[in-house]
Figure 1: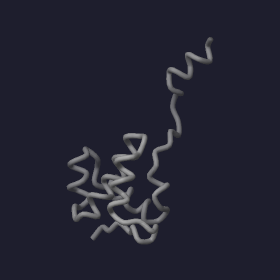
Figure 2: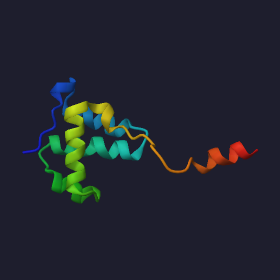
Figure 3: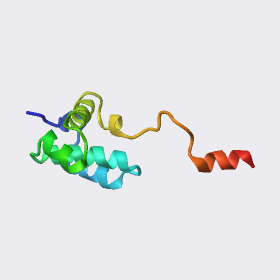
Length: 92
């Protein structure tokens, strides 16, 4: 059974929900809410179906959290083109 190890990081399920609600990026909100749902008894397939994500992706989020903590779920832009607004300001 897939479990979210909140006690390792001195958290509880309610803290996961708060982090989901207060996160600035939609992907971060999605990840924390998925962990909250799993801590409430749903499985990765149910959460994946509800979010449109593959259940393996949801399981990866849980394992990442359990291994590395809540900071590992925060979305970070790692590649691609910079946002258009930044490109326009550099051209001026």
